Length: 246
Ligand code: BTN
Image (cartoon, rainbow, N blue to C red; front, side):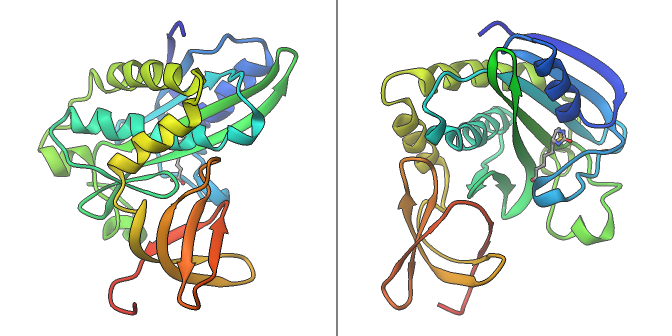
């Protein structure tokens, strides 16, 4: 994959720009980086707070030629990429299914993958937000989020995007190889304490599931063994760690 990086001072959302460029025919490997986002998006329609120079706001266009049932594995792959990038900064990250990267249980990075139809087939835009500074966190996230500056005492990030593109290129190659999705899930397993044996709760639209994690399905869905012995397969949702209930 050839990487091209386009940098903007300000955008509504790097994902929106990357989706637009994908529909205009951009090759995979096009990366969009912005100094701030005025309408940064998180998962489930949430806002991603994106003040100027307080975070890395990064999106990449991919055109994966993989079976569409494995598309969710792209999110897991990106979690692995962010994990290894932050590890290069001396941190010890964990990945909470499906795509939150944590440092000491506080969120430092989120990933939002979105797809669009283009004349050249389906394109996937993967957006990565990494908190660089904590100083302007809004009160609702101050206790549950952290930043590179808080964890390393430096906010210098000249090579953060470079490191991301290096690992994206490496793991995307693996994803596209024979048995690629299974290999990515194996890489994810090695980096996430949530893969198995973690007591969790998942709040879904119509029910709340509690139990203990028991690995991932081949498409990346989370397996949870419920207290009554049944296995629940979670395709999407927010996972919370349970501390004392189980
Ligand atoms: C999450 O909810 O955890 C996902 C957050 C993803 C934020 C990134 S910042 C760069 C890209 N552009 C966006 O609008 N969102 C993603």
